Image (tube, protein in one colour):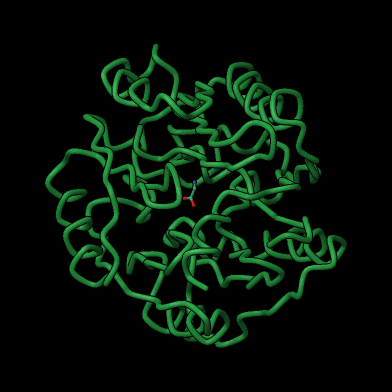
Amino acid sequence: MAADVASSLGRCTHIITRAIPDSLCQEALRTKSDSTVDPVKVRHQFEQYIEAFKNQLGLNVVELPADESLPDCPFVEDMAIACEGTALITRPGAQSRRKEVEAVKKALQDLQMNVVEMTDENATLDGGDVLFTGREFFVGLSKRTNQRGAEILADTFKDYAVSTVPVCDYLHLKSFCSMAGPNLIVIGSSEAAQKALKTMQQMSDHRYDKLTVPDDEAANCVYLNIPGKGHVLLHRAPEEFPESVKVFEKLKEHMLIPVANSELSKVDGSLTCCSLLINKSPNL
Ligand code: GLY
């Protein structure tokens, strides 16, 4: 079972995204308090991101409207963990983000997903802390995600092993890693990133290949496996991380799509943050 499921990693028919509210520039949470988001550039970059899914890859993009009272609302990844036909609605670690789940839950119900809610008030979980490899889950224990959140994820997706990884220096586990293929983990070069990878390797009985990039931030990519296109990787643009892009360019079998994300990254938004990948095709 594991091998088949692993090879379906990245299969996707629908993408849920949410538009950027004006309030994001001033009010979205951020770890670097001095960062200023350019309101025009952030929308332009986000449009390019959505265009990649829609026009370059032909996916169905469900674009939820922005909510001005929820400045972090474009970061839909944190609101649900979707795997096969089930979506676990999270309980985000930041109190100010809890209401963001409502619109995402409705979109998942509209897509006929089996929606499971995290009702335990002791649990917190942000999707940015959840790395699904196709074989197992790794969950970062961070300021946003706790042990109880990881336990509920394990109860929801019983077919998969769930291991926890301490995350100290970053907002989320996926701030410095992501998948680039069924067996390939992209990882940053920092000591913290390498230590987290070592923990994941020790916890797994599977040996993953790794792709080490010089910049931790560039290690967050969106991997897709699209019929007729094969392996696809949305990665940060060369003008942002030229040395990391040289590493991605060694992936000769991947369709590489560079995407600029300098503005959302000022409010800790990575490439995976802004989309929820859903597979509605019958051949799971
Ligand atoms: N600004 C993204 C977050 O803090 O959750």
